[in-house]
Image 1 (cartoon, rainbow, N blue to C red):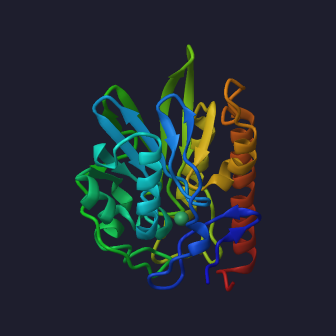
Image 2 (cartoon, helix red, strand yellow; image 1 turned 45 degrees about the vertical axis):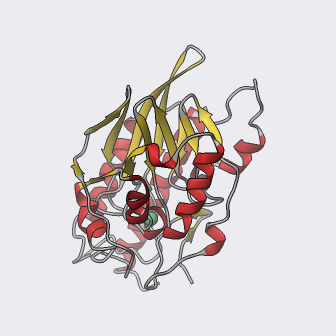
Amino acid sequence: MRICLLAGYVACAGILLGDFTPKWNQPIPPYRVSSNLYYVGTNYLASFLITTPQGHILINPDYEESVPLIRASVEKLGFHFSDIKIILISHAHDDHAAGSALAKKLTGAKLMVMDGDVDEMEKGGAGDFQYRQHWTPAKVDRILHDGDNVTLGGTTLVAHLTPGHTKGCTTWTTEILDRGHLYHVVIVGSPNVNSGYQLIGNSKYPGIAADYEKTFRVLASLPCDIFLGAHGVYYDMDDKLKKLQPGGSNPFIDPEGYRAYVAEREQAFRAELATQKEHGPVSR
Ligand SMILES: [Zn+2]
């Protein structure tokens, strides 16, 4: 049992030890988002492959049980899983990060994680301020800080600290040249206030509300043409996939959708904060 859905948006992370949600882990065909950026995730857990001449970058290994599905998707696209050189995550919750150790073992890739999430990754999810998580610990090879670049084979990703959902929640941006156009890509880490998150008087995360404030400032400041996120539902993936046609316009180019999403999520955060200010700590 998970407590995840919030106003139609996916929050995430299990509330039980070793939790795994099979219905989030159904295979779907991989697809090209744009240029050298591909979707290799499941029906519900977004994973992205960025290919380069010097090897590939994988964002989000998801659950351990997801790794074989991601591998099959990478191979279906014609790439080698073993050519993945760098593994990144959206944030240190099980549904995005629990497969990191297995993905490292299979590829030999370097795991690079924002400083606020490093501890959880190396302790297999233990120490999260909200959830009792438990997965195979994964050694972090490079600790990232806000604004750091991750570069491979001519592609650069920028790590933006967007904390609150986890202390090291990371929104990734990059620029992609596709058919003569330069596009700003944003992969949202998560702006969601999960059910039960205590925004006021949180002894395990005293700065949580201020961190969400920072997150919304950052998300509002990012130029975005191609809107993606840690779950497909953030960016209406299923609807956009139906519109994906060879030679047609790219449905993932959606700057208005990005702005609307960020504004709606900020409004949801402010409403929750106001409720908690009025009624005290959450009891839900
Ligand atoms: Zn999460």
